[in-house]
Amino acid sequence: MLFAFTAIDARGERLAETFEAEDLGAAQRELISRGLMVLSLEPARGHGGVLASLRGSRTAARPAARLRELAVFARLMSMMLRAGASVIPALSAIREQPARPAFQALLTDLSERVESGATLHEAMSRHGRVFSGAVRTVIAAGEATGALADSFARLSQLLDARMRIRRTIVGALIYPAMLLLMAVGVTLTMSLFVLPRFTDLFKMLNTPTPAVTQIMLDAGSLLRDQWAWVIGGPLAVCAALGAWLRSAAGRDRMSGLILHVPVLGRAVGGVLLAGLLSTWAALLRSRVPLLEAVREAREAVAHPRFRALVADVETAITEGRTLSGVLRESRLAPPTVVATLQIGEESGRLGESMEFVAAWLEEDNDALIRSLTRALEPAILIFMGLLVGGVAIGLFLPLFDIATAAG
View 1 (cartoon, rainbow, N blue to C red):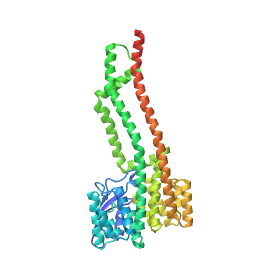
View 2: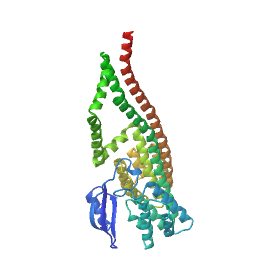
View 3: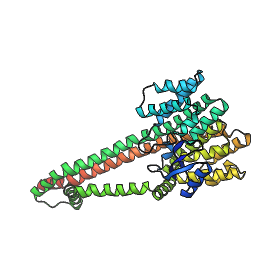
View 4: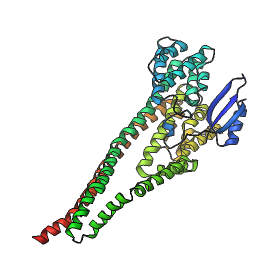
């Protein structure tokens, strides 16, 4: 569960951030253990959802930084630091680039705080809803080891991977969505403009109409006469379903159901697993200890089963057990992924193994999502053909019967 708090730290500075905790009591204990004097603590609003792990952190109202802006920021910082610039000149140069005022204001604040003596990851902690704990940990590790440029490069790769996943999903859904919109448009056009003309024609001919044709005519009349109920009813159901999905119980229930859908569940699970492994890999490659990497990646996970997986991994590492063993027991990772990670653990190259597995999963997910959309496209076209063909047959067959009888 995500909580927002305001507090005063040991230096007397005011903090306003968000973080994950099991419940309100756990959140209070976490803040006390950090030596903070809590001024306010409440559940954060406007967060959650099945695909939240792909979107990163958000501000309370609108995002102060978009995923693409963060990726470009990380790439430019890596390039400038490798060219020999220090942090403050690099931030000032990036701030001069064309960008949204909100993001420019964020960069200005980072630059001012670093110039006043704070480290970059401390300055980022003032914007916890933009720079997640995992991001700040990667930057802190880079500052501690003197490899900040490499840390920004890894961060850029992580954000680029998230953008690729998002582009794949959005691009795959555009064409089926257009086909569905076209199907709805054809249905409404025939109901509102075509059927009324045939209704008047059959009344003028004063001939009995077949049952199927009469059902279609009655459905068209119902849509025209009771359009407020016909349209408002489904909209009300969708609004109620949306409200339920925004609740914690609804999100958890729907997230669990999606994973059990034969092909869709595999695609969603693969996307979530790839994102989690990418985050862990970026942290480990920045020389962050495994236990700390697992903890910091917790806030990037929104799906309940994967959130439980992270908690199980954290417990297992604390008890001296292996990460691959927990993944094998959870059945959320394919056996080949588990075997690869096990080899990485045994050889001491777990970060590289995670990086390789995450890249392989992204390619596999991309192919799977595209195959799903290729299967949806002919299904929607067949549905449209059956719809239009059924209506045409139902309307014109009586006319053929009348023409035959007259002949």
